[in-house]
Image (cartoon, rainbow over all chains, first blue to last red; front, top):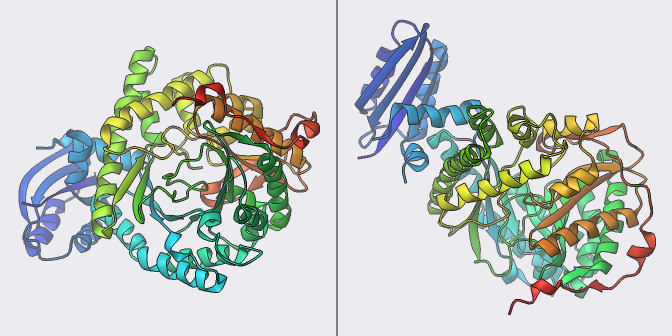
Length: 90
Length: 452
């Protein structure tokens, strides 16, 4: 299974998860884990997703998500999980 | 499973503390391009570089996007031209520098290193031609970097070359004086040069290397500084441990990117260079680390000790994080490329003499330091000799990248722009070393070099 991490940071508003998840659904990406908090109106979400059967190229997905973030005034990143494994696991 | 906090920590390092992969440098051997006809040699060099490195920038950008970590520079290092071009029947190697520049531009990299000669024990005819071509080559090219190795711990110091390099630096400054003497920012004089250094201006692809290799330089002074903020006032054990742990994490990212780059480019992975390399940006500075450690300014008493522990713990943390560590690996202290060092030099907290002391324990040497334009070639040679002696006796790489700023003096500054930054012109000891430098010959290898 190929996994990626999506992080969303910024001012909370209606529809953030809906928009991100709609995109993921359209791209055939399965969500494995979501953790989300709001501190002082600040939205902070981390998702782990399965991209094995993703229908679009990885860099397109990165750009699309960043674009959704820009529209909503948020910072959305999608990264391969290896960078986190490399840094935090021996 | 990776935790939420670990994900956020990595991304904070990238977004708030300037964690990046500083350079992916492709080393390319030019030994098989040898030809007596210089035009044919140039053609082979151009074709080899543009074939091997055609996807380098694309792959670097892809990796940056997919892993969310900036890959700042994509660069190329080549076999020292004095070796690769030794068979060419020609008087000047300037056309080779132009070929390298053209190839660098064609593949989109921002520097190409290896307009170099290794003369630590003596000159070949080709070395002489290369060194004589440096000033003109630095003038007519944009991206070519040049280096000359004038000493090693094993062989001593070639003082004829030291003398000549003082003159060459001065001439390079003269020829590029209408561009802030920028030629000198691309020219390094080494003692104990390493063959797999991915960082410019001193990168070249050594003759013991494979045909092609990927070497990666990681960075992250900002990450170390942020980590040290969490242990303010703690004892030295804690301080060292924090640097070590942070260096480990930074290097792991570099290792992962290097492996992936090597796989995608189908080129063997060479080494990771662990160096902490600053940029002129706030939050990406070695000087800020010193301040966080408790020094009011870099240059204050204690700075050499602070740098020694920083350098050592960067190595200790990094070595375990990567299977192959090489290059220069430590902490760089270029003045013009670090806003905190620039400010300290402007205030007079940091002097050339203190920087020289610091180079005994840093990973390289006197780097990106602007000196008055009327500094004589002999004085430049004297500074090179001092620095080479430090490297030779201490079995470490030392380098000199000085910029004599023609027409300007102490109190004025020079601006290179971009990663090269700007620098206040620093005072040089005014007493002459002319007769010392004029002696010529070689300084024999130190006694502890006889290890066989």
